[in-house]
Figure 1 (tube, rainbow, N blue to C red):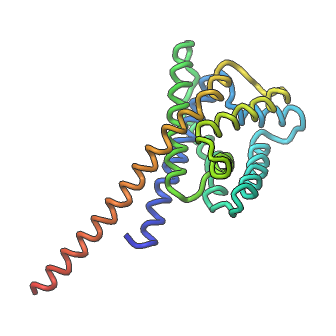
Figure 2: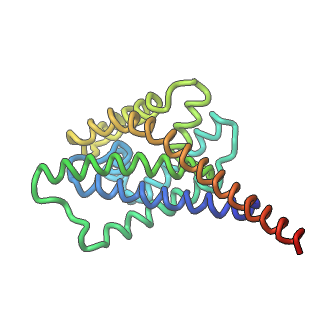
Figure 3: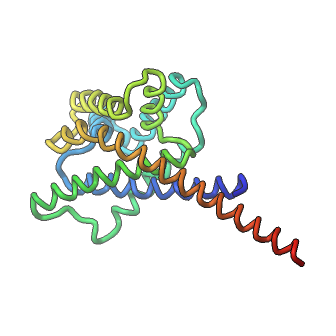
Amino acid sequence: MDKRKSIIARFGFFIAGLLIMSLGIVFLILADLGATPWDVLHVGLYEQLGLTIGTWSILIGCIVLLSSSILSRKIPKVGAYLNMLLVGFFIDIYMLLPFMKTPDTLMGKIIMFLVGMVVMAYGMGLYIAAGIGAGPRDSLMLAVNERTGWKISHVRRTMEIVVLAIGWQLGGPVYYGTIFFSLSIGTLVGIALPQCQKTVDYLMKKAESAKKTISTNEIDRGAKL
């Protein structure tokens, strides 16, 4: 597989990961059991300072990207910037679908919330594994992991708890689901990321092997003519 096709394939994994992660975020929102820590922060800032929740999401994303750049001493990849733009777009598209509704029963809400967490974790794992660049928050997670040697699950859990505490103080919406998400998402990402990385690496190597096989067969056929 040449460099151009490799990049295209990785962008495919990247976009697929963002689509899956965004679906998970929408499930969490519609479950109505409490906003995620970052959304608690965005809503809290909106309540206190105005602007819009989306604007605060972008502004916080810029601050987080700057922080991760300082920690890692690296310029963020293009994927970090695409993440900020595409995730919001995908979320809006999902929310417009007529069948995307909050369940009527508590059990339905709980199931949607749990499924949303798993879907979100694997979406994150897939787009990070693509190697195009992690989003602002995940870039910070990886930068802290590299600098401190802490496990991904510990880093993510700490980030979520700190952000939740700040958002709560600002008056953001906190409920039982928010607390459960903060304590659990790190573990889920810690499980999903290695699995997604192995899957992406395997598929990329398989595609490379298939190309080499085709090239060898073409050479053999040419030699027989």
